[in-house]
Image (cartoon, rainbow, N blue to C red; front, side, top):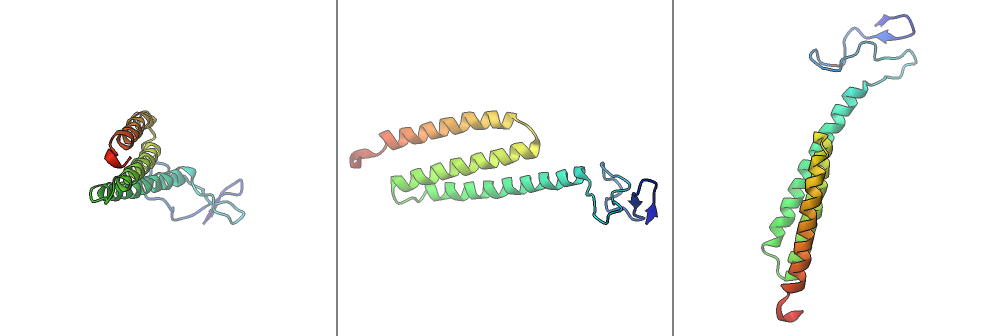
Length: 130
């Protein structure tokens, strides 16, 4: 450890890789607490958003698979609604990951059309049992 003026302590071995774009020297404070580089924390958070989006996409796919062999029309409607909702959550997570609001605009249009289609299917497609 190398002590610098102002109370900062610089480690001899940096916790960040050599090519890390947000590398800072002197990330340790004299009080003993580690001041984590905020840019590195943001990169870890973004990776967590991508992992959440992948998990939600997998769950939406599982819900869509449930639509095909659904025993009744009501079960199929519930599975479609669940798949749309989970896919919307995945799109929100991808929007945060990509840091792009255009995905949310597309999401609103698609979800509106899907829910309107689901309502029409429920209203007109019930057959003689309704």
